[in-house]
Every structure is written in C-alpha cells, then in structure tokens.
Image 1 (cartoon, one colour):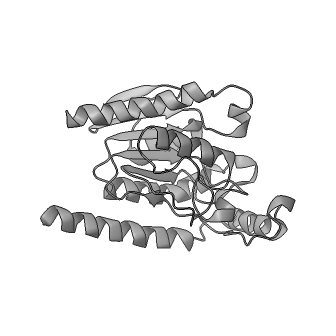
Image 2: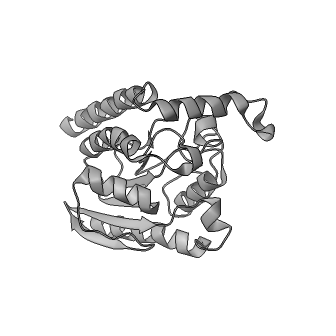
Image 3: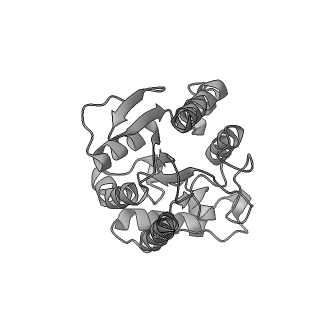
Length: 233
C-alpha cells in the first residue's frame, strides 16, 4: 500500500512539474521563436494549430529507463505538444521502443494517437524548440532546474539514455557528474546506481547521412533492455 501511495504522489508531482514547464517564461528568445513558428507554420501543416509553447515531458512515472533528448522539434513537438512526436525522430524513437518492449506501437504522430510508454520516461535538455537546434548556454541552464527535479522524482530510474552531446552534457550537469566523454555507444556504470548510455540523436542530419544507422540505434535500446532484464534476474 505504501509503495502504491508513493507512486501516486510522485506521479502527481510530475504532473504539477509538467504544468509549470508549459507555463515557463524564463527564456524570451525561445518563447518568441516557438510562437512565431506556430504562426508561420509550414505548408504541410498549414491547417493545424501548433502547441507553440514549452513542451512537457511524458511517459511512465514508474520508469526504470529515462531518455534525455535535445529539445522539441519546431514542427514536431512544438506542433503536437508531445516530445518526439510528429517527426522522423519521433518515429525512430517509437519504433525502437516498440521493438524492445517500451512502447505499445511503433509510431508517434499526435498526443491522441494511442501511444503509451511502459517503464520509460522521455524528457529533454530544453523544453522549447531552439532556432537552428542550438540553445544558448543560459537557456540550457534555465531549463536544467526541470531535469534536476525530474531526476529526484523518478527514483526508480536505473538506465539513462542521452541523445546527442547536448543531452549528454545536460544530464551530466543535472546529475552532478563530471569527467565523462560523449561518444555513440558510450556506457558508464555505477553512476549513483545508474547506468548512463549515450547515442547520436536520431535527427535527419544523422539518419539520412548514415552517421546513425538503424542497427546502431536499435542496439542501444537492446543494451538498455538487457540491463533492466538482468536487474530482474
């Protein structure tokens, strides 16, 4: 009973935190940019209403896997209001999570598409889409407070998967970890009873050029799954 109550309390605290995130106004440059993107749109989404504000994290409050990305995409999460949703990066993530048992379906199209996550929580270094996918240092610092809060609330996390150098550095800062070097496939064990895995971000820039192949990407998720299964053994 106590464990169930604790889970309920943490889930409510995450909900409250996400509500604060969506109302955040700490970075005027980012707010102006996401609102402008939401007004200008692109032709293929001209008939849609954009979310156009900070995007909350989402997933299983009881997660043992935490995924830390860079930021919502301008016409992905900034449009749909859900991280890794409505763009190719979201489909790469959903497909890999589905193939390794963390998601119930292999695509991520909208908030109401029926996608649910099991044992995984998805967050990011920055909660607003930044111009050119390049947040400024003080914007990363402003947003770090939310990741720090999530790390305290998600107390069952055993594996942290960071996507890209910015996500890697953001997690290291929030977790108070120093001296680690980012590379695709890097693994760091015994970081406060957690395992840190690193991957290139599944952006078109990486996937279309072959810098990140599907086999490379899927292997990272298989590694995460193997770690968690070994914990249960």
